[in-house]
Amino acid sequence: MNTFLVIAGALAVTLMAASGLAAVTTGWVAPFGRRRVLRPKLHGYGQLLGAAAASLWMFLGVFPARFDVLPLVAWVVFMGSLGIQMLAQRPGRTPVPPATESVS
Image (cartoon, rainbow, N blue to C red; front, top):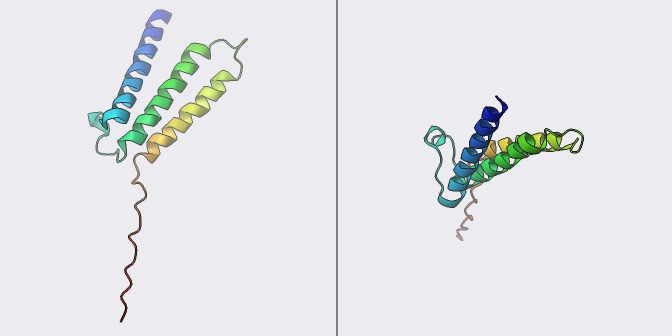
């Protein structure tokens, strides 16, 4: 049973990292998120960070004797990646056009 869970977790993290890499390099976002994501590169960076944190938690956080603070750090980093992905769904700042002064 543990082998199936490890394979499923590794597959999920790999797909998340591949999707993040595709978003960073080409701007491609999965079809179920295209309507919401306004900044695909930022979304991809969030996915890459989330994949790294999830793999850190899954594969190194299970050793409590040697890495006692590691699961907490991985959880904080994963929550930060979700925050980054949430920011990617909001419009970015647009520069204010300079006001043209009319001399009368």
